Image (cartoon, rainbow, N blue to C red; front, side, top):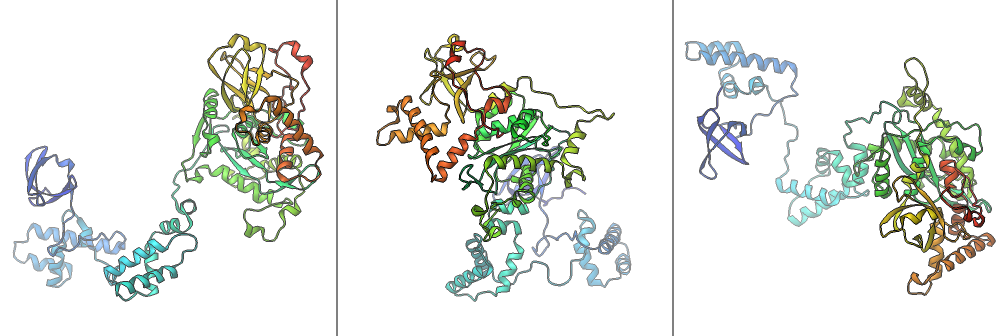
Length: 608
């Protein structure tokens, strides 16, 4: 077959007619709309399907026709093809009619339908009866139904009856007879379910149900891929002393995709922050010996640790922070963020959240369940009885139980067995993940930071001055990253040389250790009617912190906010002990003269 004069092609958004071939790589075309000619390469042309002599639509492909129909079409195609090769000979038409077992009119119909380019599919018989999708309503009524669906099918309360009422109203205004309920309902079945769901229940929930997920997230070995996320625990905890309901704690969880092990997590009374992320990463990467000692349960076994190759997470601000990204690059950890609106990209960690809630947390007294419908008349606050320290121990035991429970996606193995399998070679020899060279620096890398200048008076942050003799060599106007622990501002860490962190304490070491939360609360109280907070001195702030602490301790009836602040302070992470296993004392860089003035720091139970 070859291109015939008059064949139509789509070129640059318009329909052109073939005129002639100008060379081996160019043809001439004519545009009827503009009455212009052009020359182009044949490879740039797209054929336009031909229409019948009556201007009808091109033949629809019957790709779902039965095999018998395709075989009949193929037989007829071959017979007609043979006929066309010698159709001028006497008796050729009668021979064709006889071989096809058709009448003369039927044979002529097949001859008109025959298309050498289309092949047998041009002769596949159309399905008898009314074609699927045939509509008998006038076009203006169809347009009214479409407009009513678009305007009324929005939100969870949408109903087909509501759409029908809108159609009746629009038809009445247009002076037309309204279609039946069945006709309107039929139009719903013709629309994609996913589109209807997006309009009714929202983009996120509709995508959860209908969006295609052709790819699978596979990790071939432990530590290759981790996923991290925050979740609020569906259980209310109580105050340590009064045993009155306090709040729901937060958890930052990390899961190893290969083994489904939870290498680390962090529990907190405060909403997620960059500090929560730093503590969760630290807990996951480092061995858990000191942490288990702080929990006080020798039966807890937690042999999972190691530096990951990749950590995937959502787009929360703390996961996108520059500090977190630089720390990850500095420690050769690749970060991956899931596309917005596609939570299934973090399916493993989302499923872990659900497993912990459904299989463990929902059996605790004080459970809140996932919504008010499931909760019913259950009194969550009235039944609550676990303090934060008790819940922390319970949670560690629950995670251990999860590690030794068979996992459906691990072919019946437990996460612990899968982890051990990943560290066992072909000869059956067991190995362990490599240890971090400098655990202390690793953790400090991920701590929140602020840029500050090292002046002759030291470093000033939040109105507090910090000093160490080791800073004397680095006094300049250059800004450096100063790392800090929001729960304990007694020390900050700075690395001006790029070689090691220097631990810097208060200039006035007699001042008490405070958190950022306490510091801000004291400043707000002091500012009062003052025009600006700049008039508040650091001495006034620390005095107010002491007074607030005494007030909270002596108060018999505490508000939830005050109790939460007290509980958080008493359960705040003892950073040096919990994360690095080091005692809370000054570094070797700090001179011995400071030691006699240093007040012992209370180290509270770990909550990484």
